[in-house]
Image (cartoon, helix red, strand yellow):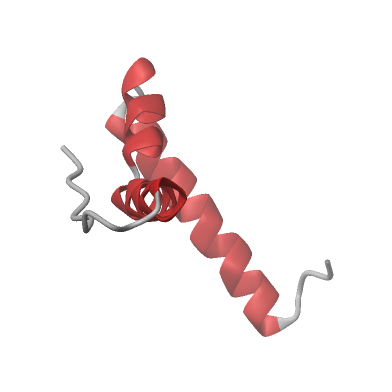
Length: 65
């Protein structure tokens, strides 16, 4: 649950802006999207390995973007 501390004299737009920033930092939307469908741990791991290989190729210059 997100709690926003706002002063009595604070504008509602500023409070909304604080809420949006806190919402982004909490990554609530990303968690909800991930929970919509189950992905097997082996598939998650495969994706992580492929990303690591891609980053390594970029770092060594073997792969041009």
